[in-house]
Image (cartoon, rainbow, N blue to C red; front, side):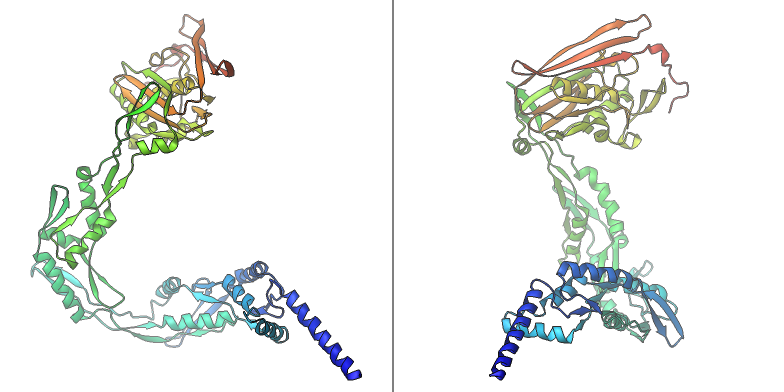
Length: 553
């Protein structure tokens, strides 16, 4: 009877142990498992990975010695410098798999074994060959004598390619270093690694170079070739090909004919004016407040240099005489499909200003500014910033010098006249009933901005012109010049708002030319006034702003 009780008690104890072990290991790494001495049994995968990474961050800075016997020399480098990389995630995942066999009894047996044996698992370690090779090339330069592969150079006097000398060499065995690093680091032992010198054979010998020589001569002898776009052809003569052709030693052990990108690229760039086309946005008009397309959009096209270069392989592989220019297309921003997708169907406001009498440089700047902001799309609740969208204003963008108000003087700077663009934009935004968040008047009355009080000055980064698209849909801004009139048209969704503009009213005018004005924007939804904003302008006398004596040329 006692024996039965003891057996039953033992079975109960074992069952309780097994149940407890299974419960303790549920969704966790099996109890007893360690990785490089770090106890991770009983932890979840994420927690174990964090702990392991904390240890590894210190490990990668540890040093290991590399020793050369002939000549006697040694180097000390960190594991990181040698390209050693740890995969904590995969290491933890492998640990988690232990005890999780599809067969429940096999899995349970594994968990029991792990609990009592407490295995110490190695790290999963890799070595980045590029980093290791860079270290070796830099540090072993005095003891290595790399093999020299044969290649080809052109002899103008002989009108032929010549094969350059090739030679065997000796190098440090990188694979041996890599294997020892993985073996040692995965088990956390960092003993000195003894370097081994091995023979380095050239990848290309004279016989292999001779084959390539024949191909290269055939290419030259078949010149001229032609670069083709539609009905245009540009000849490529033998002398040009000599500048373009180069040779590359491949890892598989042959000498490849290549075309030098640095030589071909300028040639293709020179063809760009005859091939490239800028995108043309759809030209819009309005009938009964609805958008109609007067002229469809045209996509931009430009030479795809990289893919056109690939076409030159046809000369080598297929012996074709004509090489097609490959084009890259960029859809025009404003086209019928875009308008439909964005829900842009109505004209919601227009702003105009007249720059009649402007000098040629000022007109140039105005047209650049109008073009820069043409095609801008504002999302609902997005804030427009004139300065941000305008970007850099300098000679690089094509701007000329023109007068601007700065430091209480009229001075010449690149982009003078841009305020004609910001003023026109301000008028369109006000007429569209949008919420103006920043507007600044000019320091004194400027005739280009009549009527006075309806202008907006800008000077990057401040002052700026800013407003919010407080309509329910996207807004498309189109800007252009018609004669001496600058125009901005806002297109979007008509939400029924109605805008009334009062003024600008001059409520103070002085003999010295100074003025005070007020402009009122009232926005209605039906008969209900939903917003009203007043824009005050305090213009000083123009006589206070003399022209600078030594303007920028």
